[in-house]
Length: 343
Image (cartoon, rainbow, N blue to C red; front, side):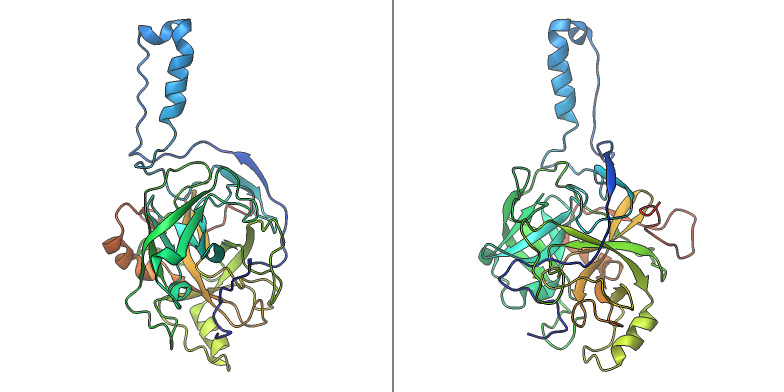
């Protein structure tokens, strides 16, 4: 298999190299304007004997059901100090494990209660739905726990421009689950960027996954979700770096780069299809999809991601209910995302 891709093997692989510790607190439950809560305190509820029944109804009403769409990009575990190689439980509730024949194969991101977005090259060998399933709500692959749920795949839709061989352009695929899932604190959708979103070089974003922690170094049991903060690199710089004998081809208009020129930290085997996440206006956006790179954490070989902004029109045509977010109203300039996480 081409070493420039981030291939997925039958072993359980994960993603990142060194990190730090994260502190968090439990934030408010995130609901979109479409979710409603009516509190009618009639004489029924003033009875002490009926108070607990009313309270139970109230608590039940703020739990998103399968058909409801919670606000995207708002995990209920809110981080305040940058750190940690290990992600916190429910820190990234949209990340999923795409499994092939029962083994972790790629990562992906939940965008509605029925759709996941990932990398097209994850299905290079097969798009047969029966071979794949999606594990949602997991934090540790070796110990998913009762909050996780496994869902079958109805069908896989790679982007029509993806060629499977000579170029990584269009390396994006949509995966339709075989039934709608129920949202929870551990299972929530991420926002998608609209056409106004532009990422300046130096913008701090995050990647997460269960891939290898280095070439040939599998993530040890219990395979805890890993995270890494990465800066955006300009397309011009990235094109120049990969022009120097990489053999992978040009950085195309639907790609963006992020990482460290000195190497040592990067996505790796098993991370393909996972999210590049940037924060704007308190919501997390899926800025990119982990696509390819040369080796893992090599010097002058940053990670290359498929831009969701470049493919937002295609996603809108296919997926109903995905939530898009854009540049703040009235701001016509490029802006930096993700600045809040390191505060």
